[in-house]
Length: 262
Length: 337
Image (cartoon, rainbow over all chains, first blue to last red; front, side):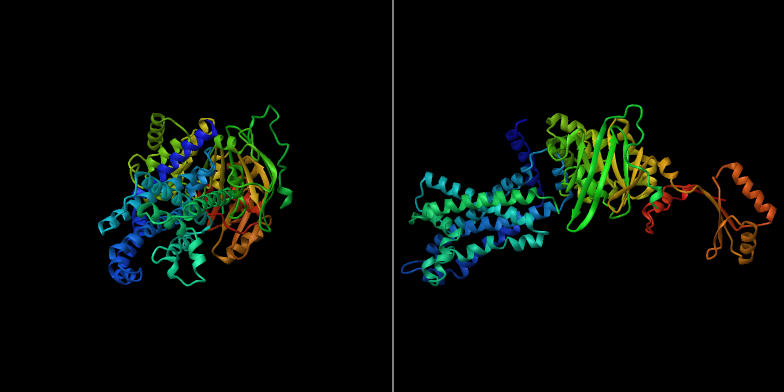
């Protein structure tokens, strides 16, 4: 069997294993979905009037829903990948991983299975949050089919990038608690991005941090695609972030996994 | 007791040795500044059962981890299944099956799913995989539990599933790291039966154990590992010859009777605390009668007489100089009268 077909076959097997885990024990995924959904409802129904008042003349609650949803969708991905870090860490403490290491299988398949499984979960979570968003009044403003496709592509790329980083975090964490702590930036970063308020509304010294961290360019790009706002340099910035994090996360995870197990 | 150490190289095999399934020269491994393996040499003929015996912390698991490609050695060379460990790890992996000390089953999925997972990873076709999985579940008495999550299994069931998973790919060499630790006596005997069956198919078994009885029962050759070195190697009988022969032990409850006996039997080893005497004896009927005749002639009436034949316990203590009591006492070796 060639290396590539071995990789595909074993990764598919590992993916099936991870999906079986997720299907059999959905509580982790569902818990992680709670955060973005609660934040969505909180900011729309509790803080909505204040937030929309801050957005300038004529803005009402619906305008704020539109502003908020793209960021929360990306936050959903961040939140899902915390689950990835936890389940990778849990998995590594299982004896069965040692067994995999002594089998003549594609070495990376264990990690690739986790990544693909987690990206699929991210997509499902995004669909779920998206449905809630539509239910409370979110509408895209005449996005074309191409823009929808690009939005979907962006979400998959972004999920892949964060997932590889989360896999690395899971690998270096000795247990599930440590994994969920180490992965905290993945849910913390969207809080200090343009998810809730525009960058302009933040203190001047903080604006560069908020503007160039990985979430903001992706959020602004998604807004542009769905709502027709200006994307500008955020498009390629988001792309660079996604590719850079993917490459970084991949090589980091691979090198940690290839070390002698603890 | 260095005088008891047998040379571990250049032994036996005059009449055309079987090809080695596993061979190692000078394996070394340290964790930090702690030396765990300090130069291990091994040669295990194909189709045999080899037991690596040693107390906790002797480095048994480290040997298994190195030979099964899980971790790399700091020094030395090894070939497993004819493949070099350092340069052909993937070929080694294709030849071996490993059942580690800690259960290597996926607890979140069912026993059957675990088996099918192994079939997929061994690249069996779907039909073939299902056939092999069903066959092994049957053979290891797991059919009833097959649809339950493996995390709900008892220790013995988990171990059986573990070995069943190891066998899916039909490995020629199997590593079993303490396969019966933590099992109740029935499960242990069950596991022994399973291991014996493996060998009849020509599989080479590398087994680690802290149970002397287990090595005695199963292994063709035994190596005693202590402090990162192999301190003796040979068959169970060869090892037993390393220690002084058997004895008869007399136990007294009356100190006066004990003193009288010590006077009459000057050649006996005394234990004044326990009021026992040990007389060298090989346990044959003739020698035993001679001892009884002597006792009768001297008018000695011991409260208890036991015949003790040398077993691996004696070897173990003699070689490891350890006071650690092995995890089981083997009453069957002593005949109580």
